Image (cartoon, rainbow, N blue to C red; front, side, top):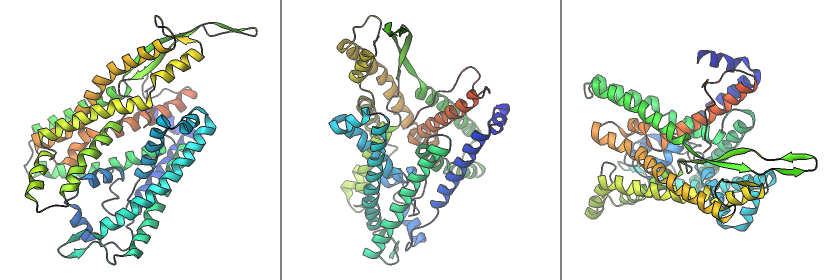
Length: 440
């Protein structure tokens, strides 16, 4: 491992890319601490205490803690992710976007441009809503905004929209001149930034006698086990054998090779948890607007994170969205058509419709255990909070959205670093083979 790190810095191009990536990520973290003008930070911090378990808390996770500070990077990269998801969904139903997806590099450039326009539009709308949201935050009669009104709203729109577009540009810079996926790394660093504080809070609990040594050792061992399980879930694939018939093109014989189509057990990635979490946080967000209602207080108990009812509904939603999103990102009919066009076939299965049905059957079977495993990983933090009385900030690193993103981005970045090392005949992190990463 030490020799591998030495090899990384022996390669000038790789060293330059890693240094550039670290510099851009450091600049992005600086932006998360620059507060939007006109904010009373003390009132905002006090008012935020009641919002950490709502939809705003989920948003703050992806903004790297900048949303709760009302920073210029407060919207984070979520508008870009939202625009990307919308275009991906449109690509499944709108013929124009379906054609763009099949046009190769030119189509990809147009989709990227549309994503940028969508990001700008979504950022403008969300920042206006955030400005109104900030004006409504009060604590002991004091407002979180010094001078509320249209002037503050326009200023917030300009500041936060510009911040989001700057983050998007930083992500694209990392893609072009750095290492790894820029957008994913920005989210990754934002999540990791909360770990030292969560660890420090847990250390305080331990030193004050509220946590036993055996409990801490068990949690550490459990953490390593969960990480290993998430890595396995991320890279697990079912290989479908494919053969290509021999073809004579001019004087050359083409084809005649055997390969495979890899079908991931968790083809949907982290998206099902994001969708499910967004839906599950909606009731708590609505309940926060009716603090004096007895009915809302009763319903809040069912949607509390330590409620078995919450866990069950959350797991069912994750399983549903896993199938839903897998059907969007992986179309068996399209895969079967591509195989048929290039002379490929699955042994024992007829090309065309039968191949599509076979792939769909296999995908349905492997998605079920993948979706159940994904639901289990998502629920583990809530179980730890109830069983060991640890803080949710600390428990969130034992599963859920944050851990899946951390593992996925880490594997993808390691894969790219290993590609540079292998091109120059250096050993990578895994001597037995390259680590298979995953793009988000």
